Every structure is written in structure tokens, then in C-alpha cells.
Image (tube, rainbow, N blue to C red; front, side, top):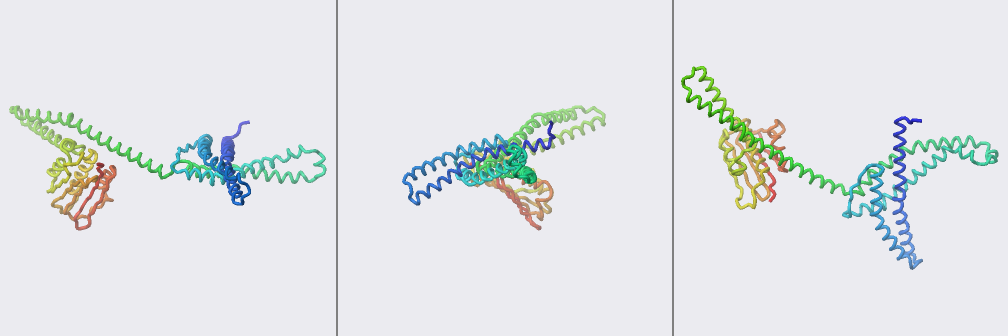
Length: 408
């Protein structure tokens, strides 16, 4: 007979939970038995009934201590084999968690498991009481004429107990899966610290990969498309200077193409600088920021104070973030800072911190929650574990402060 899917899944789940709880009974009650014996031996010592009790007590304590690692291994196997839950090895950095589980929580779980299994066996026995009755001698049935009615009520009670077992077993298994891995596995704070370290390393790798990709695109544009446009502009300029006998319409076409080629070269230069300026790698942050200040549409006072006696140069990723922060900030000042007549850019290296401050004398009122430019700057700074602060009261001035970590 083929069992329908839902009852089959329920039966499979009940079988799995029953095996899981049955295997947990000896594991949980062993430490309970040892603790009960230890308390009895302590009482024997207190009343002074037997002089050999201290030796037995020492053996019981040693057995309890050495049984905890073995019980932990068995619990990990039980969770992994029957529930598919892999509990990581916790080691012995916090042994009190394992002792607490096996000596306190485990004893409680063992008692509940015994009660649940007893309910299951009792329910099975009660639900099949008619079979038990027909197995007794007929004289007993003759002496108890009301046995059929009583057996009916017992059968109903057994069926009710069996109906309650799956829900109770599932609840107890969920309780064990909630407490067991947390106490037998690593401390959640240690797992969180490990995840933070892993995420930090993966994010740093992603930032470095993105910066390397920008450098590759910059090189490809500079060595490929930009050189072709320069060659095209030179050829058009040569044609414009040498072909003087062309009709006016042809000369106008050559002039227009020459201008378009020079404009394309200028736009491509700006695009390449926006991806990753070559001067940043060749001459450093000071020279790159000086170029930004020179190209800005408003006067910029730049001060870069990076000690020359540092053991190593600031990492390329940090320099790139600082460069793009200043570049985007100067662009925003030129576009959105009303009545701004100048900007101040200060870059200082203080130990393991690179601090960048950009200020303008505009009317203020900038809001980081509006638009994507300032949000993008904040996200770029946070990508390297930096801090982004901005002050822009109505009436001005506006000040942007960025601190970037620079490991020594």
C-alpha cells in the first residue's frame, strides 16, 4: 500500500525525531547519573560513614571531567547524522559552556526525552490494548465483564497520546537545536568576530580588484583609443595645413572634423583622469591634487602635509579614495555651492590616519540625504573603513571631513 505524501513526510519526521531523542537519553543522563553519585559521595563524606569515599569521589570527578569531551563529540555526531546540523569544534577556550550543557541542560533534556519516549510507549500499549486483552486467559475475561468498555476508553487515551507525540517531539527537537549548537559550538561572539574579519578581508579584496580594473581600463584607453584619436587629429591638422586648394565645403568639413577630434581627445583625457590618474601612481597624492586644484573652475588653496620620513607610502587604494573625494567635492562646489568664491583643501597624515578636509565659502545648505553625489562619496569612504562627516549650515560655510585608515 502506497502512503500519501503528507502522511509519509510526517511519519519520516516522527521517526527521525524519535531516533534523535532516543539517542540523546544515554548521552544526557550519563552526566546526570555521575552528578547524582558525586552528590551522594559528598554527603557520605559529610556524615563520615565511610573512609574510602574520597577515593571514589575523586574517580567520579575524573570520570565526569573526561567524559565531557567524549559526550560533546557524540552530540556533534548525533546532530550531524540525524538533523544535518554541523556543529563547529569549540575547542577548550570556554569549557564552562560544554560542562553547563552536559551537567545542567543535558540533564533537563534527558528527563524530557524519557518522559516523551514513555508517553510514546504508553500510547502504543494503550492503543493496542485489545490485542493485549485477547492474549490473557479467557477466565479473566469471564470474571471482568466490563473489560470491553474500559478497553475502549484506554484505546482512545492511547490514540490521543500518540497524536500528541509528533508535536511534542518536534518541539523538543527544536528546543535542543536552539540550545545545543550555541552551547556546544564556538561562542557566537567569536563567530561574529571571525565573520567580521572575513567580510573585511573580502571587501578589501573587492576594493583592490575594482581599483586594479580601473587602472587597466585607464591604460587601455590611454594606449589605445586616445592614441588613435591623437593620430587622427594630427592627420586632420596636416590635411588642413597642406590641402589648400580644396573647395570651401571640403575645408569646412576638415575643420569640423579636426575640432571634433580635439574635443574628443579632451573628453577622453577627462574620462581617463576620472578613472585613475596616471600622475597619482607616478608622482603621488600631492602632485595629483595639485593638478586638480589647477584645473578647478574656482580658486583652490591646497595644503598637503604628509611627512617625508614615513616608512612607506600610503596604500594606492587609500590615495585613490582621497583623490576622488577631493575631485568630486571640487566638482560639487563648482556646480552647487552658490556664491562660493574659493575652496580650501587640506590633507594631513597623522600616524595611521589620512585626514582630508574640503571647505568652501558658499551659502551652505548641502544635505547628504538628497542626491547621489554626497552619498556616493560617503559610500566610497566607508568602503575602506573610513569616516565621512559634513557640516553645511544655512548661510555657510560648508566643510567636508574625511578620515581614511593608513596602517603603519
